[in-house]
Length: 582
Image 1: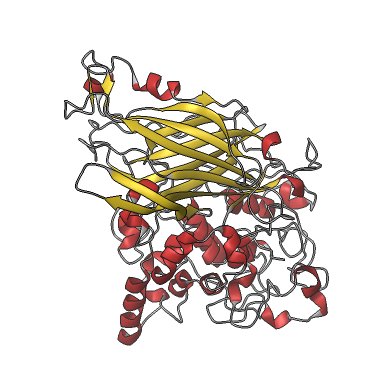
Image 2 (image 1 turned 60 degrees about the vertical axis):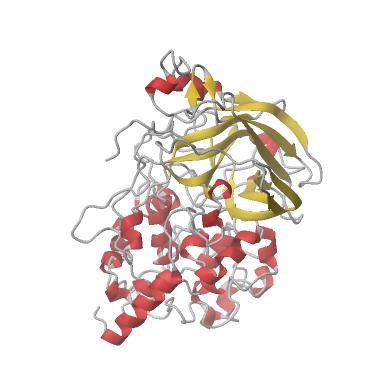
């Protein structure tokens, strides 16, 4: 069985600097959530997953909203052939809700059809007709993909937001884009609410700075959202919690961390194996359906998996990762950690200067790459009954020496975190990370690999709550450690942002910042494995300068360029092709 912990997340010689530059260039780190992240899929944008979100709907908390985005870097003025969902592609959203059974329980599948209503013009929209008119069929499987039933036929995809003459005027469609957008929201025969169409890309990140050898935040210049005023195509489905519950789960959760309410979500795109071109205009497709893209946790294939294995990662399902263990090394010793270590290449990346990993936590534990982390405790009686005890989860979390992040980063991407010692906040532990602390997350689902894991029992944090934060569980942990009354008791209680990434993922969550903080060891600190500058004998508080440096780190881009909607589908409407780009 597998387990996990939540992602919260000098000087240099010329020889080291040359080695560093070689390593970085060869690694191909891409800090866009999943935009053009692997060699093969970068040549097939219509099937390219860009982002995945799963969260309890803030205005309809009896439902879960899942948003899967595709087609990276859509220029709003991309005519004459505007972006659209592809035909001969299966776009799927997968849900796992039962760890006792291998594979998915629920699958939503969308397939799209397109028609040119007036092929005599080069315009996309003219005189009430569309030359990219797209509809879709939505099917649902409740038996893991063995059988499917159509729950929505002829779903409407709104046209691209070309500009006011095409959308508003009498020589175009004679309507408003608001009307087209809202008119495309549909309800299935089984009660789900659905939207499929172009939207503003909700992911925010300084791509230019990140690609410039990790210059994020930019040194000596202003950071910039590299995806501002770009669009993507989204599939948004709002699903009743009752539909997503595993068989036998209670209709109401027993508490806000009820294990029966945990789901895993991932998205994929598949194509027929054979594409045949001919001298005619016809293209033929045949053969088995082959998965060409997938997405669960953000940034996995971009910033964790090395370029030589990126295409392999896209071909696997999360369930393949149970036996396919060759990729585990990237989580045990993540490349990004090299640039947060002064003994390695930290001095070459000044933007990451606030991010440093524990090398002598509590005077004893080293989590830098190649070190042993907590493996030195293997067999110690102090581990009895904890998640690190071989009798509880086997050798999974302490598999061997030289794998320091097997206790935090590896499980964060593979199983979710159980409400089991040591994965509780340091509040109430009295300096012992192996003591019981304050519960703050349980999204444990050890039935596969990379997925977004969400505990549906956790209430949503209102978006207008003064404690709402884009730092998700990092902020929830900070509140639970430092803010009264939350830090005065070890009782289970709702802490604002317990519903944030990596307990699912909200649109507002700053996942780039959270994951960089996680690589820098913030999860370890949250459970009591404090930073090196904390000495229990002399330091008055574990909230030391190193911890504050990590918590206050920013990439310089902390929110989306366009406000999100307050109601389904929550993503912002797409940019128009005539809007001025800055």
